[in-house]
Image (cartoon, rainbow, N blue to C red; front, side, top):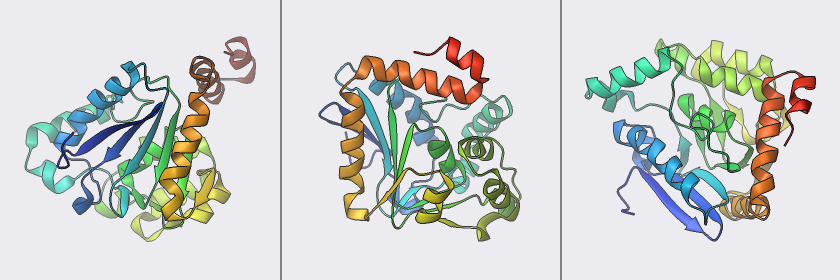
Length: 233
């Protein structure tokens, strides 16, 4: 693991850590990070010593979506990302890639645009007191689609719609995100990593049943009540 890797992997006991590592760009996703993400998720999913996964960012930001400037210099990567978006074939989050292990997301700072994918698709979300959430797509002449759909599925449709329609001026602070149900807990910045490790370890104590519970819970979110009960884990 090199410190200049755009995505860092670490193991802390039974917990695997996936850390966005482009702090100078707000941890925005460049071509290298997008190529690495599916490999990193697969590596953690296949590692029998890892029973739960934490996702967070380095520096002052959590994740700020696509690095449009870098991708504009890499037309092939930009075309590939555009094609995957059109075909709803994203390969960024554990949910996108079918990872069955519990995922705890620790939002350590700004979470913007495509960064909302990782919040929407996480099993448990924590935030530091300094975290903020926003969807700047419309301010950049872009369409917010899958991120907004995923966030609205978690809770608070009205606030998600307002963010998507008004753009960068609408910023949701950590405490408000907690009230809206996007975040289950807000902690001091210096406690975020430790608390994320604690929760991931709690989920890791029963890895086999945790996977079954996770599958049942997500199925309940995506289907009707009767069908969800019939397929419970």
